Image (cartoon, rainbow, N blue to C red; front, side, top):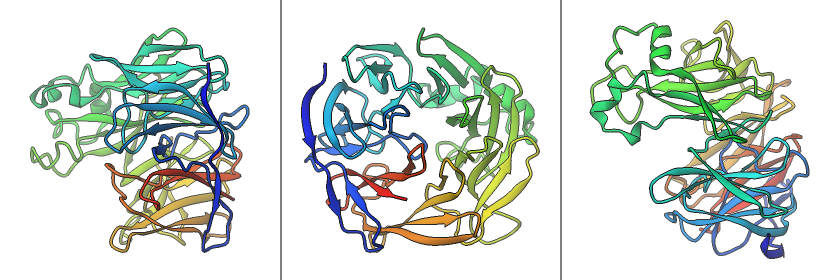
Length: 377
């Protein structure tokens, strides 16, 4: 049963660009959404699911739901698996019937679920990443951190990507690291390297999954495994047709057409990263736009008309959102705001599009406490 109902915390805040910004939460606790690829709105009625915790380093906190305008805010569950940036990755089922979130008991990672209207809840063993837009399927990957580092290179037949049926809890391995290695042009060179998978993400229609095959950050420099490996792969939801798409820079995300992947990546020898689109079938690359650099967490509006980019200057503690019109190849400043602690231990803005392309939600610590805001587009 829903508890702790609050009429609304929402207030309008000043935005130098003149666009309307509504701060949905004002509580003394941190309020965070999941990630820039996880819309927190229910696809059925537009309610927003989010996480609320007492401090950035809290592992426990509340799963809450509110109307799209911040009204009727209430707690629906508790989580013991919070993180500062994404909370418990609260996200809706594709039919709007329940909210999924990360949880755990003393020994195991769990995926919690709750019907926000009845309070009926349950759990499955697992580590939540992304719920399919086409059903109660969950995309996830094994965690290299669960094993001793010297064991990681020996476990390529175990580690990989999975789809989990959250009606039954059953998981199916779609591909192993060995499968990825077989398709890699440097397979002989990297055969004994510390490889792992991250960024498992469903395509917009749920028919495919993308993921990243890499040794970056955790192992590349530590073990001299250079130049580092960092490649996008795609696979069908049934485990067929594994493809290596190619190398990239950072922050990969599906284009709404489900045929291309957007990344911040080098392009044809140009300095710095660009907004690059790669065709998952052919590997052919093109620029999504030339009016803005590839930076931050860029993402397409679901209608394919715009890209939003968060640009943060950690020296001046200032940030802005650029709205790129891909048809006219022009950019405008959508939002300007201060940032306090833009870090993985603090608050990342993580702008995320509403499913109808009408709004962007983001996390702001301008008040030194992370709050959720939306801006109209």
